[in-house]
Length: 341
Figure 1 (cartoon, rainbow, N blue to C red):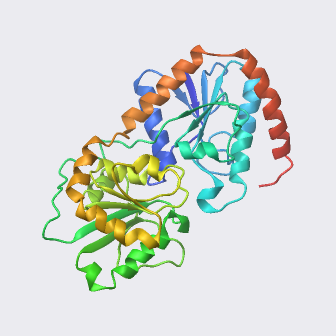
Figure 2: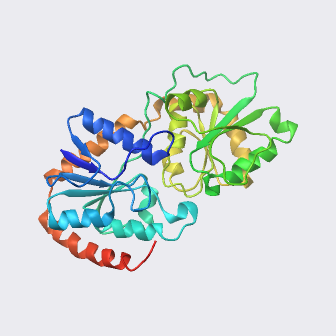
């Protein structure tokens, strides 16, 4: 297959979208497929849209480029749209519109979690699949990870590339305040890896600069519990990486987190039940730590599902769908050109 990916791979820590691009590109190339980051080839089999925002420096081609390519150069190309974002995540206002507009060009929609299907981010009459995110087990694994917590403080950790408040900083700050009291600080310590919001600081939390790859994996394995308090999380990679390192997850019941974390830790809703959920996880720590052996969301599983989807969809090419696409997308495309972003 000849596949164009709409993401230019960035060097250094860059977030989950960049990790996904690295993973899918590496797998496809290793399995004999040709991967491109532009639309110059006139015989592409697959185009994968990963982000509808043209001003994102990692975006390698925009939606109007895809539209022109499919209408005027190669009507048989199959366009896939991977949706891994939403306005609900950060309280923005135009991203869902951009996603719906981009989705009109797609033959097939790929959601990174079932939760996203219920949002106004796509055209609900199109074909879709759900493929959960997975992390690289070369970096994130249980090798050398001890499951023993007896006789010492329990080490809690989280990590985020983006420093938006909705990443869970209300709970991270709450835990910071809990650690002011000996009843908590005698039992727990908390490490935050990544970027903080502007003018935000902790008093009782160890802050580590953003890490990636093997360095991040080794740092995560120094801890016992992975905490994610992200609000309206579309999917995320952070908790997946923590889980694959063998850390039971203390997760907020919001967005896609229950789909990824259920049966591999304990959920909570907010400050009202955070302490009880933390205590419940610790009380049953041995059981939860054992369950992490079966955590399924690996990079290998994820990229194999993408490759299989691409192969199967090419066998089901439907010219009628291409004609319908042109009409639907043209409406959204023309509307989008009236707006300045």
